[in-house]
Length: 462
Ligand code: IFM
Image (cartoon, rainbow, N blue to C red; front, side, top):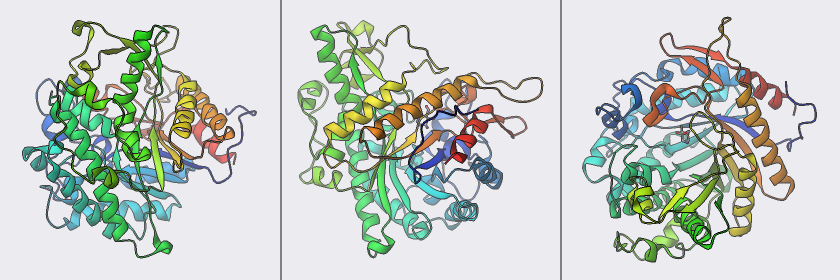
């Protein structure tokens, strides 16, 4: 039950849930869809826990009506989903595949019939494999192809979708995908990963330009933005070495993306930090303006705070080429509880992050929290129900932190819980459950958890 003293959010605050195409859709060979880097990666031995892959996932491609019904019953005002690029352009270029567009048109129409605002993300990591074969995000051509793709989707759906996000979490695409190698395409590079980060930013800028060019006037102007995963960074100790480490971590986790997009500047110190691995030859004149054009919203994903500690020797570091160069390890306070992902739980960290954004980026657009949530080892009980009290506490506390930040003057307009459904958690496969709704994968039965009922009650209070 929702605490009767839970603070009231503004009446027009947007409540939603989020998902992503490869994590829920399945149907990887249907509707003319081409292969993505995640199909290739998840079918490479040893890359995903238990050998899982997204071939079926939550079978949302076939069950989307049932899933929209779950959203309607939940009472959300909005639903954030992503479009699979290889459904629209199976090999990453050329005209739109009508069958691919048709799936998202049906989904959007179903949402609108249920009174739910569709919030579309163009890229949540499923790059067409053909583009990776041609260099992937390491090469500028991929940014240009992304803008073409954005224009195709926008032309088909702009009349019904008011909120458009270009990229989801470019940090993960660039650094987990091209440097750590834990995500597709599984590369372990330094310069290549920094080039990928830059071309993702350029792709964002080009896509915003392409979509703006298709908006005929203020009346049908779409709200365009991007979703960044940012973390508030604190030095693990007051030791000057850790204070310096925190500045380097903040550069890697946040400023590589937030400074050019929101601040119109390249982050201070990046060239010095990464000069051993890159000469930044991928930058072109005019890129900063392209990347930093005005946005209508910032999507913010946050799950945990960072506590950065100086790591004096390479032995202490992970296999992360870009991070290896920054000599930082995470060292959160031992007393913080952890989720099933091992992530420290500290709701105040989200509040600190919101204030960091407000204070560091004058002219910041309104913020939507486009993801926040937690994985816990949820299980069906004898009555085939799922009690997930830890998730309820997590959501309650994080929402209180958001409320306090709003009261403090941070312009936060909405909150999307990650996720509607348990789903394919990337390298960890189906072993981690983030959903408000439990998915029994063998039967594809959807079973709303106690947290679903809690979130429904919270939304209904308005
Ligand atoms: O599942 C992911 C999602 O795809 C991107 N943000 C973080 C989530 C939890 O790891």
